[in-house]
Image 1 (cartoon, rainbow, N blue to C red):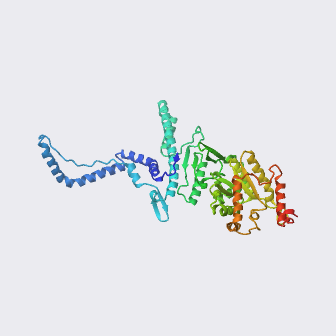
Image 2 (cartoon, rainbow, N blue to C red):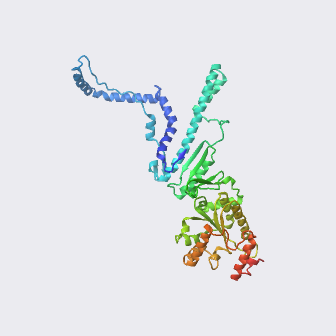
Image 3 (cartoon, rainbow, N blue to C red):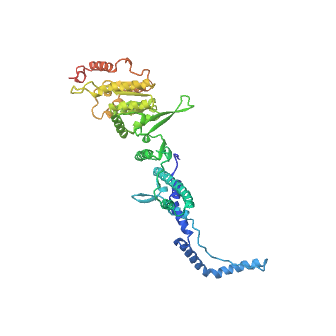
Length: 482
């Protein structure tokens, strides 16, 4: 079943009503054929009432028939004409009459309203819900009809053997139960395959952000139902959830000559995140919808957080730099989250750039700094990406991005401070632009002078020591420890 981008709810409402009302219509038609039913009596009473009302009009009707007869007898003198007026019990078009007065009503604080009075987003949401219910009812009806057919065939065979047997009584009991809405038993031979495939084009159309989030949850929950398999085509990160089990994300990508399309696949069940990594990514997804942009067409540059993102906005977006339309900044919002993000990009077979702080080997109290040891983990994951044939540009800030921008730590409101510092300093603006460009299509995958075959930690420690000497920090406890 395919739901196109602009399909609407009104026509589906009529189809759903037909299906929902069919048992009632069938029952009413059965009663119509029974002369002793109340409906038949009411129809006869209606006809009698109308015929009684026609009595006082007989004189006028007779006059009309005489006028017709006089003209007719001039040609056929032996024949007479009579205008007979009588109402017979009406044949009711029950289904049409029920549909005219029936329909889905949306209840809100101001009262009830019909579907046609709702906005486009609400109508699409109703449309999806109605289609699901429609197909569930259809499937149950098909199963019920198939079961009744099978039971009736068995009943005929058993009646030929012995019409009074226990088997006949049991079959009659089963048939009556099914006809009266009894539970349909599960078929053990029915293969455990999705009963329906729902293909939905651009579910984000006309939905505001909160509704889009709710729709995403609804559709992913539907995909967990054993009878449903859901396929979406979307341009919205709101409908991408790479952390749901059994989720596959495919991005169709044109070849360089534009003549063919090939998919890039991300399969959630094969991503192999640890429990902690998955928790961190889920937290990131809930706090930053931009996280899912890594699955769309723009080139991802992964950064630690809001300060780097603010620098990008100030130096690239605000100045309308050519990079603005080519890249997406993906904020990890924490150095530890960089590792699972790299894993996700590797699984998606995506090229990307990454910049992060190397931080300090020790904390301010002289104890070991976990953020320093993560540097090696990040580097190892990047090497794995490159070994798999992916292009990864790797840059790092010594010791952090604030120092890269020049000056001391930015303190509170770092993103806003970084934004204003870059906006007011042309040299700094160019420095950030060059960094972003080098992460997109630089000449070197690593910073100039770095030996990709050497030990990573010792090299960045040497770089940090050079920086410390230049900035009179060589005796800092954060470098030498306790």
